[in-house]
Image 1: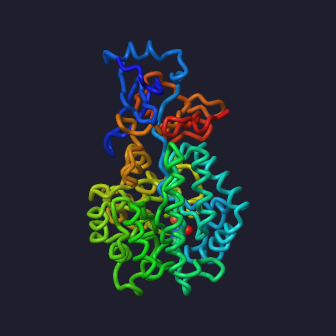
Image 2: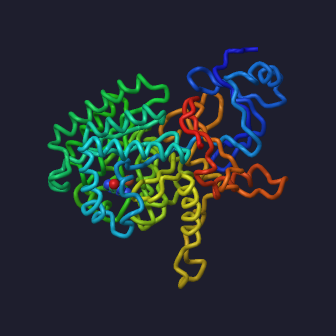
Image 3: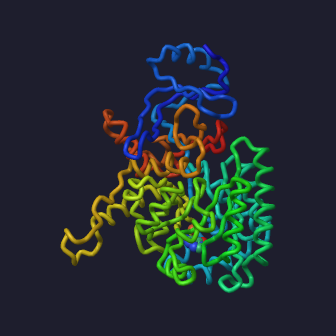
Length: 456
Ligand code: GUN
Ligand code: FE
């Protein structure tokens, strides 16, 4: 037997097999190499189970869950605005365009102050880890230094952060107090930000990555968009933006470019396998096909969509078309840092889409058939779907995947999940965890085989 595992974890776990099916692993040994990658998963009937258990049990390499504790893959937040953490939970009642001009751009402009940025970013990264989010795809601000600071804080705290310096170079669309100095400066800052984060990445175990980040088409000139497409190609980076989020933005792009924002982004070289577009609520069939063909993923932000999109993403339909989907909090368009809250809203919103919400219509005319998603599908989006969207080996507890996990304790003090029936099925147990867990139930969080959060 191979004794060379760096760590061995023992316990029960849940991991997605397909969007519809979850694998409930009862008593398993998860054997990691020194890089924090799963090398073997041993079940009790495996001939090596007993010898491995005997070899590691009682050593400092062995980590065993107690009764009532379960491993879940760490959650992946596929869309979050880090600076907006400072205003999360406020101004939830005005349209996107006014919200940006009146509240959000003034707030984001304050991140030229690195002390302020540090305070907000340290609190946010710690809060996300405590909520089970092991990987996050962040928008920072236009400021190169403060954006790099966010990447450094992720590196220090052990979170897998993918961070974008936001590009807003259009002088007509963006306020004078908050924009890039010029198109050339926007591209030069993005390029040096990419280089800095790629260097920083080499010093981390879990990885931090630079992301090419045009805020959305209305913020950017054609020249910047095309230049960003080239930079993403040159440095093989991820790309993120907002796409088809609101009628206002959609109509603006049609007027300026005479095509949908999906096709415009594609022409600029911004749709590819490592691209993630937030929202995508209003994609046409042709837009959706372009997402599928290019491998572009959707960050589904179900709480935010209630407030800014005035629509519901037809997630089930887009999954069927072969588009990768993950979940995002969209702080602070969405108010909650918890992806558990977003799982719940994704399921609820899909039911409202399917059944319709106007009670004055006859039932048969209300909704969009076949729209509902199950809790299993939402769990898939927030784990395996997110990993697939980012083209990273995360989000599943399988051989060759990275050990990013949260340990859920159903008996947490003050947050018991109240399991009364001993014979509860593993699937029902997972659903109780998804619908009822609170941060108090997240006992430990591990990223790339390292413990990054422990609840006291
Ligand atoms: N579109 C452009 N900027 C933003 C933002 O900060 N939040 C959301 N939800 N949509 C945007
Ligand atoms: Fe957003």
